[in-house]
Length: 97
Image (cartoon, rainbow, N blue to C red):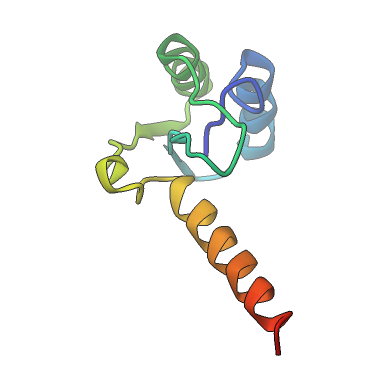
């Protein structure tokens, strides 16, 4: 998952390319979608395209996955926040038992 200012820069693409060197692989770039339970940000489009271009230049097949579900907070990165929140509510309710 590509997260803005966390793992979306040129150096990260070069590190991934080095790890995959000599291996048959295909990278699916999943774009992080922000939500209220985390402070991470969506990567910039230019950073995602640069990341893709670097991998392709190194001979690695890459797809940028289309984001779906963000309208219902079900896109990549968003469901984890809902699960975390649900877990917090369960812990809160247990404290009354």
